[in-house]
Image: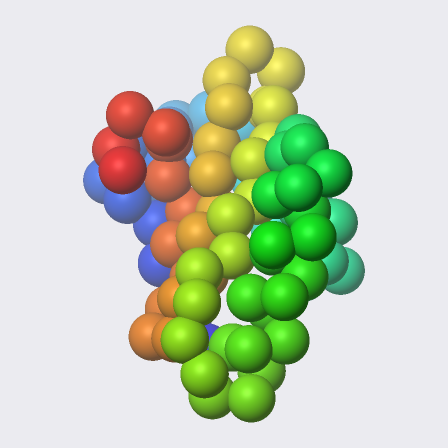
Amino acid sequence: MPFVMTGGIADRVANDEKFSRAVIRAIKRFIKKDWGDVDEEDRETNNQMDRSLNLNGGGIVLGSYYTGKDKLWIIQDIERTTIMFPDEY
């Protein structure tokens, strides 16, 4: 499954090494199924959707992570995993 990033994330990664490292940490957490700053209900929904996606079913998984002063989202669907700022959704 490919990872892609929005223009806002790509620009910031290219110009801010500290932010770039924070994005990498968030991706590693997401891969380990650590959904970040989501409530218990969303965590359980993510776990169910992750199982569905692994069986080629539908669904969306949302990870939410703080990178110091900013928040970023990682959203996985059947086609891709996208890294974005919440206002880019």
